[in-house]
Image (cartoon, rainbow, N blue to C red; front, side, top):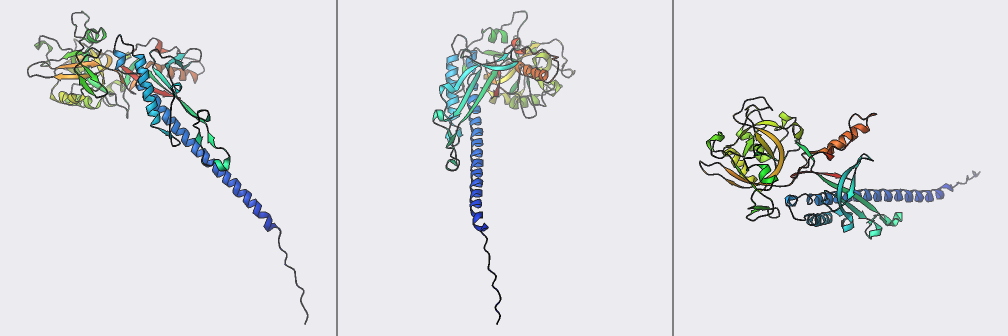
Length: 426
């Protein structure tokens, strides 16, 4: 029998060469995944550090604008700075960065002013502890502090930790030019107007005499830590507000020095009561393009010096709560310039202040009385001259020629001692 030739089976040497390539690919992919995981971990830690520094800066700035600013003769800068530093430290520790509370040193908390620089055309932080209205927080997680952010894949990447830092600046501005309500932003205001001044100088129950000139009594105060009214002097004068038993102011021997106002076509007690409870909404300020601007004042509003039960029922729970209020002057005419409609009583709004009700007194047949004390409020609804400067600078930066002066409006804008706006920068 003839034997067929046996064809030898050739084995490929390529099989052995694939294994090193696969191993290298696995190592590359693993290293890439490790880098991606570490990058995601660092990014998450950076976000947490931003949140922590922002929160600390806002907490510190809030303690810089307190009722202490209204007390005369006391050196309150040191006390406010100490309180602000403590608030920043406590809030920072409440926020974790990569699983560890953020610790701040005194050097990480800097106080100063947020000022406009003519040379650069921008706002800069000027360090000072003399009446500071800005605070800069520097959050640091670095090897120099022995607290870097440990990486997850240090065994793969060979990088044991990452250094992170973040700086936040919270600023306070009381160069107030008005207040504005938005669809999702309510002005924390009361529809309460207080007599501004008496041009004849005969009346002493005005805001200018009792509060600005500090001729008001100081028989009570408000403890913000316990949120209670105290029967002791606190260095801030009060003004006693008296209304009318009826809408006719001449029926009492003493003329009223306060009233409730409405932003609508006529005075509506239910609408006013709603504003007492909820503040001034976007819809409430619609007749004024949703804002009350000092540049457009005086403006005449329908009012009453003898509010009914609905207004008082809404006002009573507001005792102790600091709100934006209005100053007014009496007007001879009874036509509202906001709507052109006729009203029973009209007053001319001349300014914006803030404060809280300490007590309310209502006796049958007697004019109602309110003991009112000025206070400091921080609200995002405030509009400032500084914002106008920033808007003008931005417009000029986007145009070939400057059509509007970039000089800081804030240099001539009046300071409002009661209303502040807080902003955040990085």
